[in-house]
Image (cartoon, rainbow, N blue to C red; front, side, top):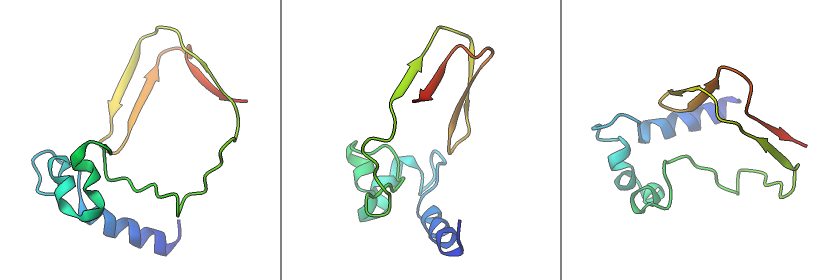
Length: 96
């Protein structure tokens, strides 16, 4: 990540946070800026900006192969991410 990207990310992080009850928290995202109004009407779940102007869209990269079996797993909420760990590698996703 270059310095410009880091600066933009820091500026964006000041606009909102993930703390329930906070003035900048999820309950208020849609009211913070015009750009985040979609968070209020249900068409966007969070203020992550994935604009196609800055992202290279590759329509057909690879086929996706999925295989899932029931298994015990642990789901961790890391505030900015969710991870799922299972005890055995029963489930996987392959890009073919």
